[in-house]
Image 1 (cartoon, rainbow, N blue to C red):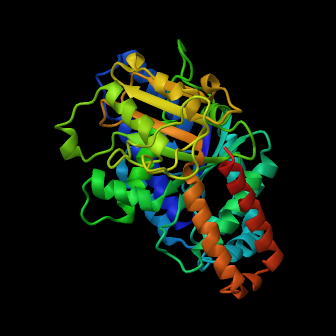
Image 2 (image 1 turned 45 degrees about the horizontal axis):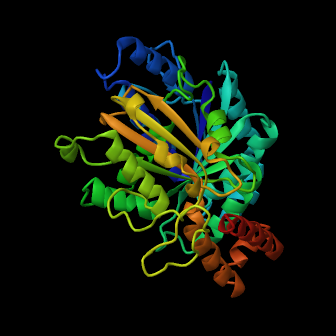
Length: 453
């Protein structure tokens, strides 16, 4: 089944292009770790999922590019075409001459209604190309105006037009130090609206991605493209084909559906975090070897201690002993709060994948009491390695991992709102005080729900 990617705003379009680049690089990596038949099956499943075959022989991405300014879309079309391995359909784009000015209300209240019909027509045309549609992956930032505001509006439109299709929003969380003065307003408005329309929100935090680039990838001068490549690698490690059950002979046909079934058991809990292991520079990779017990031990501790990368994990954080609740405050021998999960999805790729033991992820102490630990863990596997890693694992987690950044964003936005700072920029486009209050209420409820795990 196919996934249609909708790239929204400057950030969404730049990341989307890197995602398709990473997928194509993986397809052409020519792994000798699996059989030829396995490799051919993997490639066929990937192409059905992400591309349409063109008469020219160059596959076209199942994607729609949307931005209120033409520059980034033009660059994306050109760079994809120059790659020679894939391209965008030039008819699957929508842009205008004026952006949203980093104002969520401008994107949601003005550009959304004005351009809804044109954008949804592009979606329909792309959907008609799919033999079987799994759903939509929207890629968007929370900090600006187009990706966040127009993105929230388009998401609601997708839910209305395709009520039975799965809808996953890939959301880029802004830097804590700030990219845009009103980014916390934009973030609160975006998250609260997406929570009403989306099946799940898969979050990437810019601060964590920046650390990965610096400490793991050893990049000295970090650019947005470096950060975007890390995101693309993480997304590819989850959404490239894998077997979704033991003994399966066919790659998963509905990747979004399988992911929702595994991770979102209740509509109150939709926030998903993503971790990968290993991630390193190619120079370091040449001198590194990996074994499954070591990789999975680190990945499990990253989950427990809520670490975004394997470097600097707090190994003192441990799940509570059976029958005891997790302490809410650090004790002298406990340096951080234990991260409680609702559900986890681990994807394993590469050599000797069947030998990997995931018993540590099935411990009941890792999960909230109202979930069954055996059902709360889902494992996808494939002997086909991903990109340059002989063995790799990714973890998508519905847990308390996003409580701290969510609480921080809501707190900062509330302080600004209480003093009425910049509120007039939103009321000028039709967003009233009550709209803000409704959004705060929605997210306070989400915070309370995750806190109660």
